[in-house]
Length: 356
Image (spheres, one colour):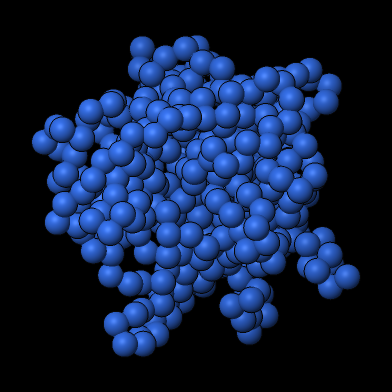
């Protein structure tokens, strides 16, 4: 009952003071370091780590191998990189720019909305262009891989966490707030209605010009707000440089809506949708875009999207998305468990996945 009451109070907390707290805890044990960054509301001034969101990195040396072995696998077609001991250190997927790297172990927490945590040593980064079979023979791959394996800057998953409830704000040299606690639109699904949507430029409060000269400006009252597909564009596009389109037409990049991302957007279909619920979880890797059909009145059509995080501590497949019930980005369980399996609303609506 206490857990349910905590979740019921969550929506109200989003409207309290935006004051945030950032704490860094370093505990040195031999050569191992645990770094925990806490952020969240603390109205009483006496909160504990269990009451606030946390992003934790178990810091151990990630050695760069003197030599790598490359292996080709199928479904989807990809190149797996192993070190001399046979340990997988990276996965490059044909036709995709995202790379899954083996790095420091991290634990993601959002305790106000779920008791589940996601612990993983997978980091997701972008290469300069889509991977092709045999690309490992080109000069840039080895230097990029060595650098990426040492990189501790926020990756796709780390950037996504920077918009959870209570996440501290950050501004760039132009005084643009590019990260921090985001809110959501009233509609649960990305229904492509201009009156119920908020893209990345709405969150930023910036006018934006897309390829082809398409101009967009923020809608009134949408500063700090982002819908489900806008959240994907905020993380992958604005923050990490993946191309974005100004409409829902076919092209090289992320279109505006979840439906168009699935139907005509760039990327590799990891789980091709057939209009029915998918159970092919073994084909996923962290960072994949996951697509849903949540609107029963909208027919068999994708209307919602998120980013796959991986297995949680309950052995369920968890994702992060921006949705109205949680009033912003979440991988918690308020308004429905953020799971691809388990029989809840989102798992019943899970249809497809892409690797971009």
